Structure formats: C-alpha cells, structure tokens
Length: 115
Figure 1 (tube, rainbow, N blue to C red):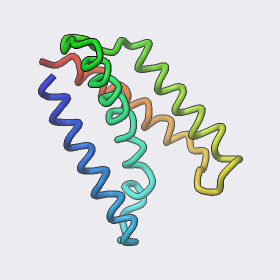
Figure 2: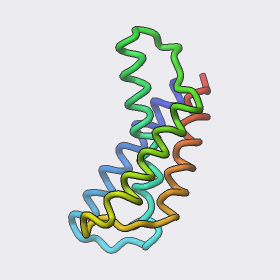
Figure 3: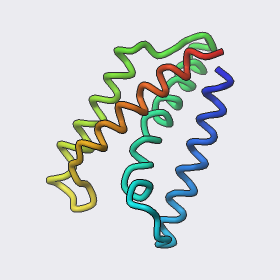
Figure 4: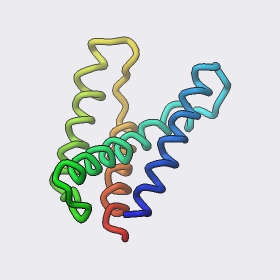
C-alpha cells in the first residue's frame, strides 16, 4: 500500500505541474500536452476512492476489485469521450484517451495489490 500512496503523490504532483505549465501556455510535446492527464486520471481517481472506502470502513486492508475498477473506467470513458464532446467544445472524443484511461486503471489495480 505504501507503493500506491507514493505513486499517488507523484501522480498528483505531476498533474499539478502539467496544469500549471498549460496555464502558463508553456509549449509541451503533443504526447504530454494531450495525453498525460488522461493516463494520470484513473490512478488518481481510483486511489481517492480506495482511500475514502478504507477510511469510512476503518479497514486499510480493503482493495478495489477488478469489476469496480473497470466500472469506473467505463463510466469515465463514456462520460468524457461520448457524452461530453457533443455538448462542449473543450472535450474531444479520442480513442487514445480511452486506451490511456484503461492503462491507468490497470496500473492502479496492480499497484494497490503491492504491500
């Protein structure tokens, strides 16, 4: 679990740095500019979910099962890649985003199983 907490902090700091650079209009490679946040999204969100459940249940041994992790992935993919793009100019449907959500979900799933 210590590994997950460390990765969570690193991912959050990376996200904050990315958003700061984007806000400052710093030129970034397209791969970082368009896709890094999508990769970071699921491990951050799922970690917050896990830490919240562990806190509420007062049981640090709890883990999110694969069905729960994949359910959150599917909800995010549908909402951000299917529902939002036609409704708001800021969102674009991109299959690579979905793939990065999936990869991030599996990164979280396996990290939470580490001691």
